[in-house]
Image (cartoon, rainbow, N blue to C red; front, side):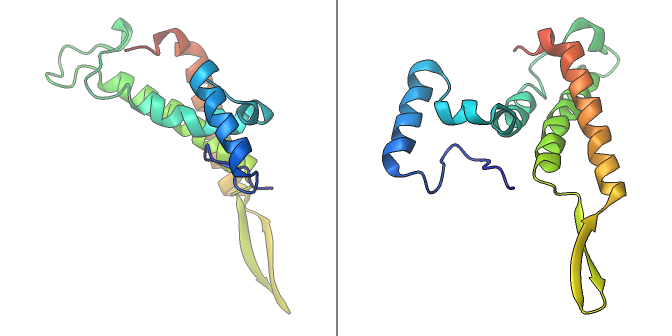
Length: 139
């Protein structure tokens, strides 16, 4: 089942969508967001996390004074891994690890174990880094 990855919910009618936009404006989230918090965060967090990259500073443990004009390069790599972890979560939720295989009489879909393992590794790495550095996600 494909989860919706936009803030507009197709097929729900204009009035419900307007209600949800209003809820986001008033309280920061809508009833529709709460129905699938994981999908909402998978959609919302990668660009937010990436916005902290490149010149916004970094926690002291990641500051590298030997890299002039790129002192926070290690933090940028951590942020990218976090963002990719949420994207991997979205891919796993939407079963994007299936592949099309030709069989006698047609085609079928089956799990691509390599793709699933890669997504799972990215997800685990990203979530571990998110947990470890959650308090460092500020500008």
